[in-house]
Image (tube, rainbow, N blue to C red; front, side, top):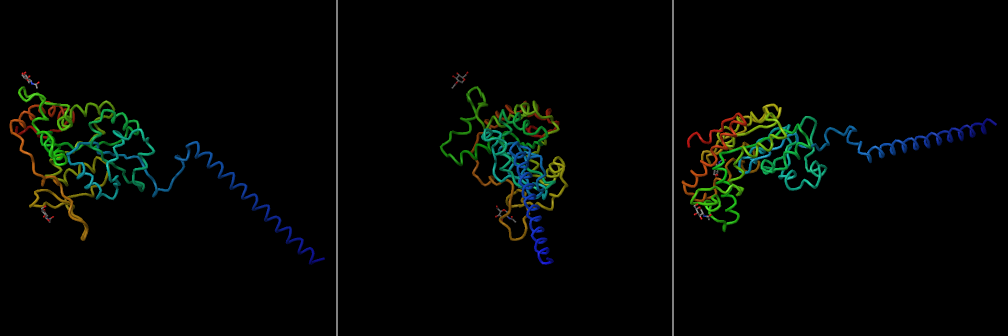
Length: 313
Ligand SMILES: *[C@@H]1O[C@H](CO)[C@@H](O)[C@H](O)[C@H]1NC(C)=O
Ligand SMILES: *[C@@H]1O[C@H](CO)[C@@H](O)[C@H](O)[C@H]1NC(C)=O
């Protein structure tokens, strides 16, 4: 009888275990279903996700301007360990807005806690709908605009375009609506982009001035470390990128980025400087300078910063 009791006891214990495991499977299922239910309702975003594995909307965007030095600025910022940036220009707020915010966030690199996500698309600055769209993503977005003398910017813009499509009419033909009267064609993008005050007005309808940092494209060349100091302060970053990251290439006449030993060729500002510049009559440039002067002064007033483009004119 002792044996039978033993067997019976074992059977009972076995049965007890079975009941327990069935119960735990049942509970696990319930938890899974509750979790799924929450996720389907979109609550998952509020559940904690691993810190090393998260794509965030950019907290800071370089919104302009074309040929201002935005590529260089982003290259310089990339040295900072607390900055992660998208490689290509996403063009979300101008071209691909209908793809939706999830599509946009998915383009972003994964970041650690405390790292800043960034992107740059220089055409945002001149896109009418961009301020409203960026605002509706986050009103706290930090906006960086690299600006440069609008006349040299227009020439640089044209130089780039003509190098891709050599059949283009001359700069003069495109810049003037009527060369006799000297009427400037403001619908030509190379001219239009440089009317900074107009574009900024559009942005200030949504964002306060304190949301912006205006980087001087000229100073980014003459004093990259100084300008990078301002950028890092604005982004709330430690000043990691300093003058020890740059050296001046005398042959090129431009600052370059120091890279670790054995890495790819040096990154320098003024890459397009090698391109042959088209000869543009000086009277055309003077007329263009006159055209921009009032807009430049307005821009200095709006930003509280004198960029000095008209000082020598
Ligand atoms: C340019 O302006 C002059 C002077 O007003 C006028 O006679 C001429 O027809 C204009 N040319 C064009 C192409 O509009
Ligand atoms: C400086 O620039 C010239 C011309 O682009 C290049 O050939 C040279 O390798 C550069 N020197 C350094 C140290 O980067």
